[in-house]
Image (cartoon, rainbow, N blue to C red):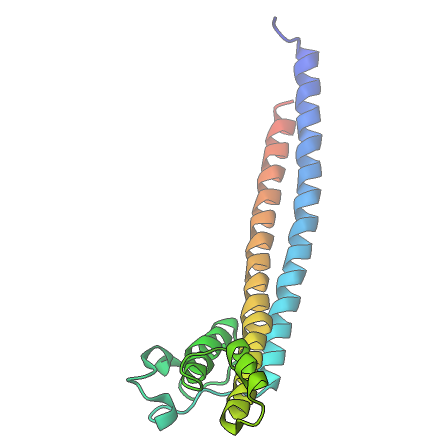
Length: 178
């Protein structure tokens, strides 16, 4: 059954208004996502920088190129980006922790230390692993995790703005052909 000109015009108007509604929705989503990106990125950078954690200097025995080849690019730098937080947490702290108690994690050493509370070596390993794994966890969640969420929000904002622009173009084309 053929549509009349009036029906066609009404359908185009409905789609035009839907596209305009889409523009508004995508702009709101894009704005909120951009705010989340900006807030999260600034917060992560500010809080990481405030901790004043630095990678050891290049050539330092603490950053031996044979043991830390992947960390040489960060030598002497302040840990203030999500990528640096992950590299420091896993590549630097994580490797040190593996040497504390023959690769055992805090939970394993803590269980052993509870069974032998007078063993000073176990107590020291427990304290070292607790501090190291806590710092590592904070860097991974607050630094790398939230920083990554911020980057995803930034991407989502750009996609939303592109979709808003696309919806606006479609609405203009539909209006021009009415």
